[in-house]
Each structure stands twice: as C-alpha cells, then as structure tokens.
Amino acid sequence: MEVDWSVEIGCAEIGGSAPVIDTGWPGWIDLAGDAEQMNSRINSLSEVRSFPPLGIALRKVLRECANFRSTKCDFWTDDLAPEVADSEAICPEGGNCQRLAVCYIDLLPQNIAAWTQLAAAEAWARASVSVLRAEHCPHGRVEIVVREAFSTSGFGFGLSLYIYGCGPTETQARTALEHALCLAVGHICATPSPQRKTESALQWQQESRTGE
Image (cartoon, rainbow, N blue to C red; front, side, top):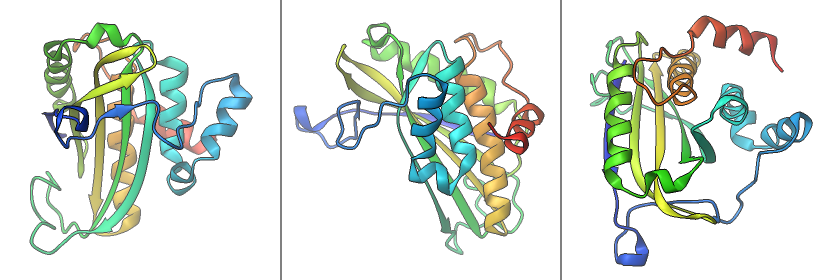
C-alpha cells in the first residue's frame, strides 16, 4: 500500500495557517459512553450514514484503542481529473482510476502529555509508514499528517489520518477505501510497536457484513 507522512505546523495563534486538532471545535460530539450511547452517537453522524465502514472504524477506536482517541472525521467522493486519474501517487496499482473516495480521522493521544515533543509524533509516524507499506491494498493510500493539537488537558501533537481509495467506479473506490481504512485503523489500535501486525481485512469485512 502507498503510505506517506508529513508535518504541518504553524497554527493561527502564532501567525500561521496550518490546521490544528482541537476538541473544542464547534459541532464536536463526544462519542464516548456505554455501548448504546456510543452506537447512537456514531450512527447520527452524516459521514457514517454516507460511508458505514467509517462507523466501524470509530467504534474500533473507541472500544479497542489504548493509545489514541478520535476527535473529528469526514468522508467524500469525487471524480479524478484526467491528468491524475492514472497517477501512481493516487492509484499505486494503476488501472483506469476515475473515481476517488476519501475519509479522514483526527486522532489525539489518550495522554496528550506523551506527545508534547514533535520528535515523538514524528517517530511514531515513520514507524507506522514502514508497517503499513508492507500491506497489500490495491488502489489504497494512507497519509499521516502530524499536527499541533489542543485539548482540555493541554497542548501537544496529534495526527490527521487521510485514507484514499480509487477505482473505475465509485463502488470500487469505496471498496478500496474500506480495505485501506481497515488496515490503517487496525494499526492505530495496536500497540505503538511497528512489529505488531494489523487486523486482517477478512475480519473487518465479516464485521461489515454482520453489522453491530
């Protein structure tokens, strides 16, 4: 799978324009709670109604992730412009890609104090790239962006996880996105060690079929 990482820092508070991860943004919904509350809150998100596998990803983060918590997400689809439709940067495996499906999840460390130094977040991103690049995911791509982050417990750094899927049709693009999202979130929910393997696509697809 094609995977890359970058750093975008320089928030408005210090005269920059880079996005920040902030749990206090207008419209923020706390998804945590008991199982019934969690499912109700996740199912209320328009992004999840548009792309149900995103709901599975959010549930997995809430239930199983000891290292991170989600603060924001989005999903959209688009046409690929002819000049980039067959670009290896978008479709690593090639193959007449004309539709793109994208989602992102903003993530904060459960203990933001663990990532008050940029070097710690950069090291995690580099290790994650090595793990995820070993996965086979036709027409999938992951970008890990390290960003400044704010929460009620302090300042530090977090991650914006962008996941892409593409294909000749929107259905195929969504399928590729689901596979890439499965692998990325499986890694996020594992221990920070890059030696841990990600959740298998088969297990993810079984949950998609059976539902909650």
